Length: 187
Figure (cartoon, rainbow, N blue to C red):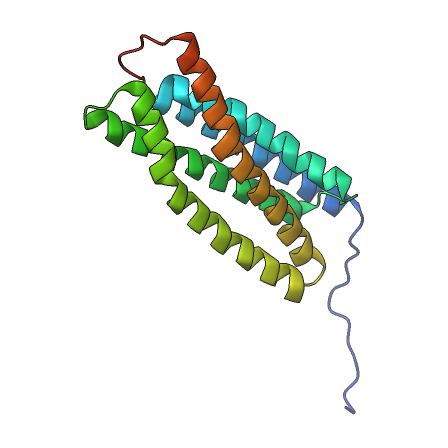
């Protein structure tokens, strides 16, 4: 076009902007994690503590998977990690609420735990599979940061399934084996 260019404002962005964003992302992730821990332990008591132990292993599984893939944890990756923590907590909440329903129906603690895990499984698998499919589409058709988000989300969902289904259940069974005469459950 025959119109001359007139500079109104000029700025330079340095690498510190990315460092600030990552620092803010890590801080928000830590604050969110502390709130999740408090809510789970205060609301579900011992079962919440078992879920938090399983979530700790979940985070280690996810970070190990990222390390295995030589992936860099960026801000979108942190967002995927935080989202998958929420999905992992949701799976535990589904299980605990089903156990609570079974206990209210008058079943023994051991049977209520078994039935709670069994009946919550379809909802957990459904939510994780649909989220996994969405993450796979994001990975296939996304670019750069979107792919990083998708990779972290996919690894997080896989680790969430393992931690919610196997780790939490194993911890429950170990806990129940140590107290076989338990008549009620603090859930």
